[in-house]
Image 1 (cartoon, one colour):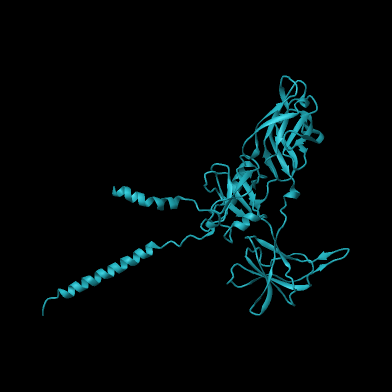
Image 2 (cartoon, helix red, strand yellow):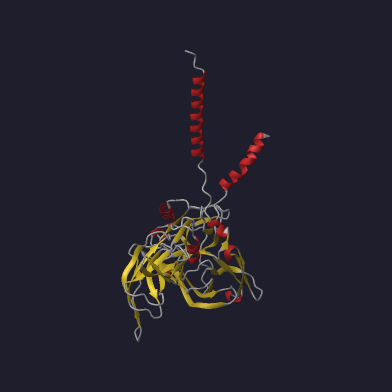
Length: 450
């Protein structure tokens, strides 16, 4: 009975030790490809506004059971976080009727998780017997980046030349012609080889259908890859615009600003309809009682109107990216009546994670007690690259709309745990001293008469 009561008393402590750390929000992740091994997700403004720590330690990736997977944070320019240029996408053969593929103008599909096609059927307006599939459909619904072309891999060795009409759709019902005629060729004569294994497409299509224009046999496709547009993959600078207020601290007049997130600010600029030309200095700090640190300047900000308007360029921070919450703008001359809008520029960072545990995955952020585990992600990605090819990079994963978890309660620091070991040691010392004193007192009382 005593053992049962003791175990019952220990249950809350065990549950607290095993319970995951609370987070303020979660973002379900949509994977661009299945079985990619590793993925990269670009952080957005809401994630930066939710995190509670300057080093973003409370941003993590969880599987369907709420267990964290191996994840790490990288700058957008680091090799491990660079975007993938090619992604494997699913494809499906389309049954062809005796009247030809044109009769199969309607396609019905069964969708799985995240809107992906798991099974597809072609519907014919007139009866007919199905023949060997030569038309096929490529599912691009998991790709949100700009596409440039589709690349095909098939069994090599047999000469072939197939012509297709390429059609695109958003809903599998209405189709538009993307390319009137695309030829896929593999010819070989001695050591010379002619190969054309790609088809240009335009961005924004969810589904692409290839309709044969000749009687060539079905293409023995092994894999279909979408090639992403490299120019659009370059991350542009995001800007956070803050409104300031005039303050006077220790005889110094300035404009102060407060950011709404832990952005890795690397550029600063001023925006105002009409501000006086001045020599500005930008400082920042992360706490109200911390000293100000110089970040940029002094620089001359100006704006010139006319036929060819021009303005001063953004200023890079001399100290590198900073995540401080408080910023101060000073002018060597007199301050204008209206505070200029402070524009803080940053390039969003990337979280790379491994496909461990049970999908689907979600990104979580905002916790006063959580800390993302440290993993050797560059070494792990290099190991996957040796297995999948030198050009392999983690596939993109995209943030879905967020949902609240613990909310603001997750941002409250937990109470400081008591150091029971120190208290126990002090108790033992006091008890030992009391025992020694008692023993000495008993010896004095028991002293024999002279």
